[in-house]
Amino acid sequence: MRVYFLVVLAICFMAAATTPDYQPPVKINANGAPIVLGVGHANPLVTDWSGDGLKDLIVGQYISGKLRYYINTGTNASPVFGNYTFLQADGNDISLSAG
Ligand SMILES: [Ca+2]
Image 1 (cartoon, rainbow, N blue to C red):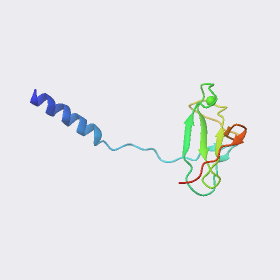
Image 2 (image 1 turned 135 degrees about the vertical axis):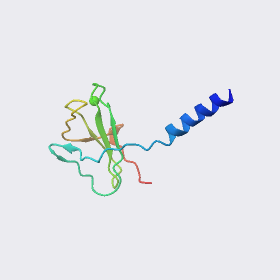
Image 3 (image 1 turned 120 degrees about the horizontal axis):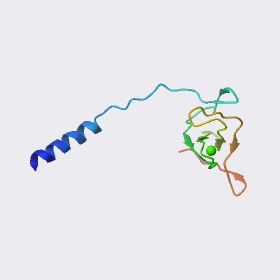
Image 4 (image 1 turned 180 degrees about the vertical axis):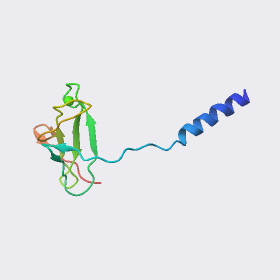
């Protein structure tokens, strides 16, 4: 029983010690040009916001705190983004303060 426990513990340790294999960064285009947000952190989120099965892009603007919503008109493998709208709540643009 003790040997079994040590083997499981060793496997868990090896799995936790694995270095992630990140791919190089890529620029995301909208209307054929890279998305530019100005200064600060972008905090992108890829999710099917519209509920059509295609993953959309939501990205924050650091200075204004507004959330850009880019609907995907391509596919999940090759997304295509055009103009954005700001996410709203009760008819007003959502704005989150930095920090
Ligand atoms: Ca969608």
